[in-house]
Image (cartoon, rainbow, N blue to C red):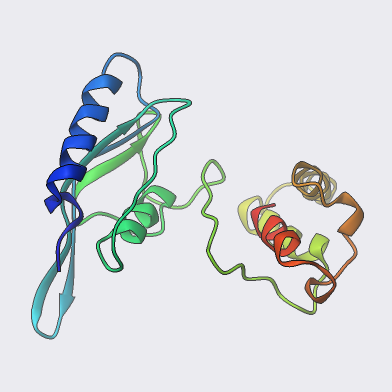
Length: 172
């Protein structure tokens, strides 16, 4: 299996993008990141020495075949996993765990079918802000549903929503 940084065209693009980005304070820095998984057959390297700098306002797209490390890298940015070597920083701070300043939109949304859109969003808000007063949590839920244009659908269950609406509930 080819590691993410072993694609010469991708390396060239990443190096070009990184050199352009060094003129300002970076938003996201992935520095010499490697990820090695233990398997019964020995170590399996998915990422090997990946470097990337992303500045505020830039749009980056990771493209590659199945199993090349795209999701592994994004899981590190989200804080769901850590690199074996190297580091990932957001606004100069090392990412060590998930946080409310980052999110991941999954290909397949995961909503609890017996809860309303409001209740599904509330679960996420409650887990991120467990110590906030109830009134603030409810306000955050309403704001997030409004941001994705689902204020009117707050009381609907997933079975009553379109696929796009379900994805927006997951984003909220």
